[in-house]
Image 1 (cartoon, one colour):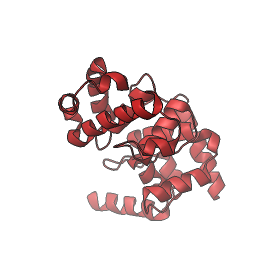
Image 2 (cartoon, one colour; image 1 turned 180 degrees about the vertical axis):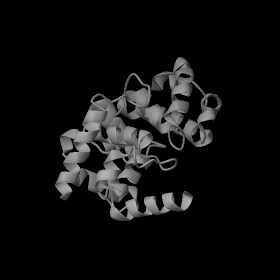
Image 3 (spheres, one colour; image 1 turned 45 degrees about the vertical axis):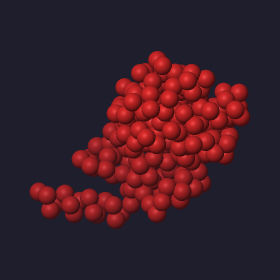
Length: 221
C-alpha cells in the first residue's frame, strides 16, 4: 500500500463507521462551545457535559458570566478539575469579549489564542465546530493514531497537526478530526486495545507498532 492508499483507506473506513458525527461537547453557540472546550482540558467530555448545564443556567453569555465572581464560577465547575485556573480564565475571557468584541467570540484562531486559558487546540476546536473554518485540533487520540498509522512521528502535537494538514484534504479536516477521535475512543484506545477490532491499525499500522502489540500479547498469554 502506498501512503496515498493508506490515506484513502483511512478516510473511507472512517466515513463508513461515522457517516454522521456526534459533536462531543454540548453547546448552543460559539460562546458556550468556547467555555465547554476550555473546561474539557484534562477532563472528560462526559464530565463537562454534566457541569455545563449548571453553569449555563447561571450564565450562558459573557455579560451574565462577569456578574458571577471567580469563586462562584469555581464552585460550579469544581468537579471538572483545574477549577482555580479555569474559573479565572472564564471570567477573564468574558471581560475581554465584552471590552474588545461586543460580547461576540472572534472567528480568528490568533485572536482566540490571546484570550486567557485558551490555547491553540481550544481555539482550533472553536473555529472548526462553531464557525466551520477548516482546522485540525489535535487531541491525545489523534496524536496516538497518527503515530500508530504511520502518518506522523509522534514527536509532539505541533508536528502531528502539521502532518495531518499536509496529508488530508482541507475540506474534510473538520469532519475528519472528530471521526478520528471517536475511532480512537471506540476501536484504538491507549489501554485495553484489541487489534482485532481496530481495522485501520491492523491494515495500515506502523510495523513497529504492530510488532510491539503482538509481542506484548504473546507475553500476556
